[in-house]
Image (cartoon, rainbow, N blue to C red; front, top):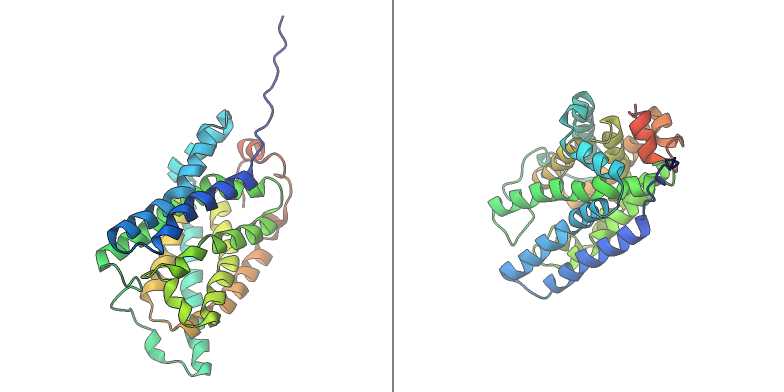
Length: 286
């Protein structure tokens, strides 16, 4: 009789994933700095979808049935979404914006920030294209980052340090966009403080998105919805760049409150080294 040998658990490869993701994003974004018009826009879109493509390929060629099933569950498991938590997260971010504008009044900013802008900050595209860009960024990015990336880090550490590391890597991934005319990031180049603020702000936001992800049993859809709301509000609420610097401080405070409120979620280590086995046997994060 042949002994049945259990297959070895899948070993996530976060370093290789990030090397390839940066490479196949920046290899298209850097030429877009020098190529204007539709060709440059196409290069930007190709770079944008790189994380999702690489994430999917990592899963498909992993040889792990559990990893493939896990991705399918995260993508189509609409029942997993904890809508109350998603709406709470949206409410938290809306409150962040309100508090940021109110605090900015102490620094001489105007109350007319409580309004919607007429246009998007994407100077090189029309309203329709800007909406499509925001929608694509919200959907495609989350397929990449939640399809493989965050779990690949979280398998080796608690979710607090995963959120910190992911926030840094995710923020810096946007770096070439600073030099592509017409992007939101390029508009920040008028002041080094605005640029620094953009990269710093991604770190506490990473904690909030991790909370949305885990609270909905690692649902990608939940993250897409939250990401879309954040992108839209950042574009359409008439906050000044100075107020967005204040907003970063408020986001840090909100992230700290969330971490303290859900300490077991962020600091538990039961899943470390066996993430796929943990979610398939013990299931949900609370």
